[in-house]
Length: 109
Length: 116
Image (cartoon, rainbow over all chains, first blue to last red; front, side, top):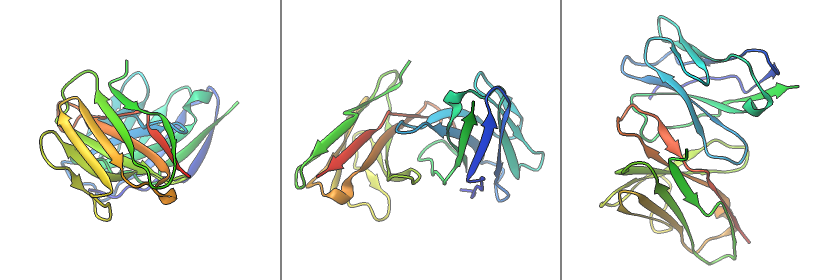
């Protein structure tokens, strides 16, 4: 499974877009990029995943670079409830996901 | 709606006792479930993979005799922390796999175990 690198922490103003970067330069062709988040004292919540194409759902957008070595999770209009630790994971399948340290996003009023 | 039900959400026990944590799949039959552990200010660590009808697969460093996993049905997996000690105090989280292998994992709400 490819190693991912994320900033330790980020701040974002409420109502603005939150852009969370992830580097996965050793990703292989059959590895997906998954994003999960964990709000304090809760189980992780699935956000989005993709292989090559950009993806969008009701929660977020995932932008994957053409060489697939990095990606960005975009929360279009951050709210206080989006404060959480965001995990970027690159793996071939969703089974037994291995979590790194993630990015602690703080949305500021 | 919730896909995974995990109980209890919080448990406090005395050292030496055993604690059972249940993880139920509400929406579909889950042949595979995963158990994670998370210490304060740390990331989730995979403990074991639970397969229905067979023995669980444990990650390196996780004692199978201490953390007993039973996956007797397609909708229920249990984790029993036997002879709990204060160092077992942690946040335990179960998850189950979707129908397709590249699909998302669904996570329980977690169990905060405190051993006195």
